[in-house]
Length: 382
Ligand SMILES: Cc1cc2nc3c(=O)[nH]c(=O)nc-3n(C[C@H](O)[C@H](O)[C@H](O)COP(=O)(O)OP(=O)(O)OC[C@H]3O[C@@H](n4cnc5c(N)ncnc54)[C@H](O)[C@@H]3O)c2cc1C
Picture 1 (cartoon, rainbow, N blue to C red):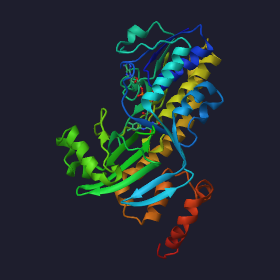
Picture 2 (picture 1 turned 45 degrees about the vertical axis):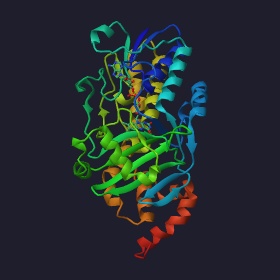
Picture 3 (picture 1 turned 180 degrees about the vertical axis):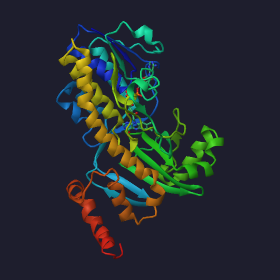
Picture 4 (picture 1 turned 120 degrees about the vertical axis):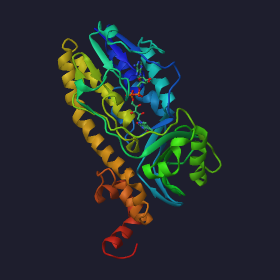
């Protein structure tokens, strides 16, 4: 069995490891266009259950990643200086580079040497493989124009830019501020004891009014530092391939075509506000490896089984991510709410949180703020 994997992100590296550790006799190669140790982005956050998905199937990797993670129990909303803590909304984070280094070591431990600085740009050169895995991210070469996979990729309206900062925040915090040009939101959380991710988001009108189209990286950074000066408390933003983007909502009707199969960001995206992109990518890797190892002599059956196992689960999470993203698309209007109502609106944004569940997960938050919501519902003053 000859497997070629394109892309050395979380999905590709993890898949290579999972297959090779079970079947050392398989020939597994992985190509990555970037040099080793070069990756874009800062930390990635994993929602509450973090690595639970791999604990049973792969305790070694679970135990290798867990100690490198920053974890916390609360989530904080900061609405123009008014802070609200929501207990029980735990998250865990890790530097993207660190995660990739750990997964590279896992792959090496089973005899895979990733070929860095190698670009896949010619399908005919891959053709001698029995299976070709497109783990090559959002702009997947393997997916190509997407016509074989029924690909759709509408973009959200808001603009966002991904920074780091050397201010470590206590919790995952959502800060909302106004500049003279309009409203801004920052998603920020620490991913090492000294560093945090800091994603700035704004709506199209504000983006235009601030004139971001015509200014460079240094001016953009200075503008954002100014908007969030009280949040950063004298610390700077750190750039790393930081430019304004719109979030693409990628989906594919089919996840495989012939002996080509897509995993991770090559086949779906989930808005970063629910912190699931990396986990989904690694869960895809796990599911594909299981399907492959169950019927290694029947690749079409394995790929059909992989898609049948993963697509419905992913679609559910992507629906929640899209609903959450829709809340952010309208965050300027939500900022008009009183803080308690703003927090309630925020917490319900993915459409998966009724009052009973909220009370169970976040008893302190519920006890403090639900009387305000009840007062509002009764027409009273919060
Ligand atoms: C602003 C932002 C914030 C995010 N925050 C989070 C977060 O907090 N939590 C989270 O879980 N997820 C987050 N994500 C999403 C997360 O980054 C992705 O879901 C995850 O990286 C997907 O992993 P992957 O392996 O599928 O793809 P990628 O990580 O994109 O890896 C693909 C790899 O393939 C390589 N490659 C591409 N084309 C080729 C080629 N032709 N030849 C060779 N190599 C190639 C690339 O260099 C890359 O290394 C965020 C995304 C964004 C944009």
